[in-house]
Length: 341
Image 1 (tube, helix red, strand yellow):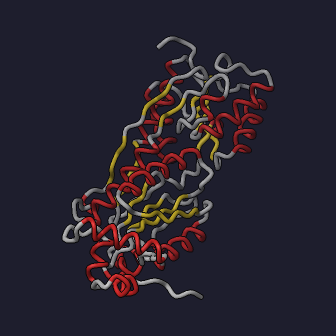
Image 2: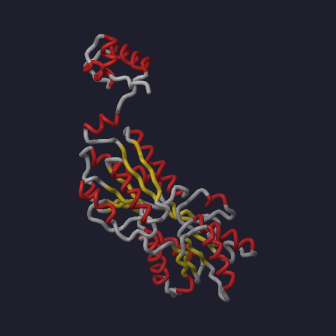
Image 3: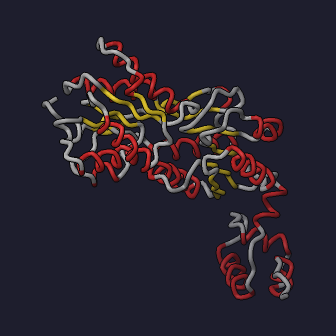
């Protein structure tokens, strides 16, 4: 195996001190531009590679942020990661990204890998079956900052970045009521996750505020998969008194349900007005286009990384902020539009 070229090799060849070579390669202002050009050219010619890892370890930093998400094949999570990458790249940080596949056991393994990789901080959206943050105790004990986003749970040691899911669930349901719906079904995600429990709470509050009954037969707790959408459509078709409104906590699941119902001759929004959640690209591909809650995924990713980097650089103490609340927007499209707003 060929020996790795060092700054000492470059210094010897150019008859310069190793310190001068090091400063030049790090663009130190004390070294004139001509000398920098000569050293950079020779370094490239010799195949020199900067050992950033060793340098970072000396500074007790790796310039690396760990990210754990439930799934990478989510349109929403893709926008979050795009926002994270944008800010991380601009700040010369690297991301290590892993997925838990909705399993707390995999999440535990991911957390250990991140810790062993010496990440400077951690960003986590929790798996559907996570009910404790004990597997992150090593981070808390070492003072390694951690931010929860989207899927969160109360924790004194870290900040959460979310939207007001209760109000968003309320607004989605109230919109359907405003379109004349009196019997509204809700297809929810796992209520072990606050993000879905809060949307369900908002749904119920809107019904109560508009003097409509909360009917458990109109509530389905699911994993919000494509199959769950198909199953919801089949359940609606079997009902003696089907709903006239449908609020689904995921666009992907909502579109699956809509497609199956329309194949059976159900008119949307005439027979059933539908609202989804997240504003995924699929919401504008389906016809009629899907009314949805725009969840600011890219902004969430950008704020998560920027907050963590600011904390690492001493410009912000994330421990003083329990929750960062982002704005959302109800996007009204043809799947629910029965009357002009």
